Length: 260
Ligand code: NAD
Image (cartoon, rainbow, N blue to C red):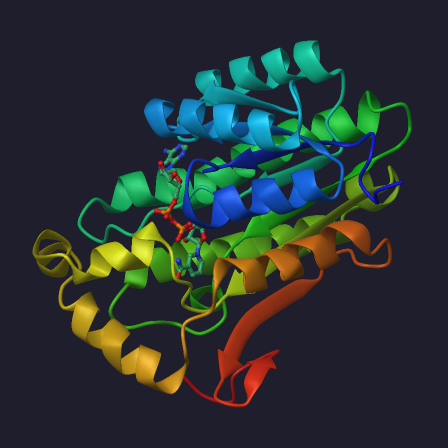
């Protein structure tokens, strides 16, 4: 039997990049997966692709903007109606946009808080006493401030702090809920591919040049490598309040950089 057989997972920002990878590794380990994303076209296509690959009704796509309380709540109710339970919740949706800073905070930080509270209420009261596990996606930039992206940095520090503080709270520990945070270094996804477009270069205030210099120091991490980190935080029952950095140097994967 696969490790996550019988479990139901929710992944936000699941239509591409890391979220798509997280959804797939959870499917490969036996879970059913609800895909949430603001991009309806890509989300529906992925639902079809995953159902073909992993069996009918293993996944369902829900169009959701995580910056909307109402959309998030409505989707969560629909997920419970369809799948009956939620055991794993991965708050992954995020953007980098220093100019639209309120939007960035509303997605990257408030969206994670919204998803976490929805999951927590369900896991502690309604999940047949089984609890559950929440994994929030921050960034290495949630541990080491990046001068080029103060807003993104603030949101990711917020995600790390929120997750670790909540892990200590009795409402989490006493109900068998675990909550962990994952901090990837630079990952090859559509997000970072876009850093190379001219439009994004202007928007990110020279982030492209910075990214290039960062890439020389820390080779880009692949989605599959970050997925292994997610799986560890989901599966290992001893981990609550854990903060796992996924990054590599020329010698391979290491847990934390000495300097950035
Ligand atoms: P991506 O841009 O490739 O994918 C993000 C997904 O989130 C997209 O499918 C997008 O449609 C969705 N999304 C955006 N706004 C949304 C909203 N309001 N509601 C719902 N969905 C929304 O990005 P990625 O590289 O896969 O990043 C995923 C997460 O990992 C983000 O939180 C990001 O900050 C974090 N992260 C990325 C890297 C990296 O180098 N790529 C490194 C560290 C952390």
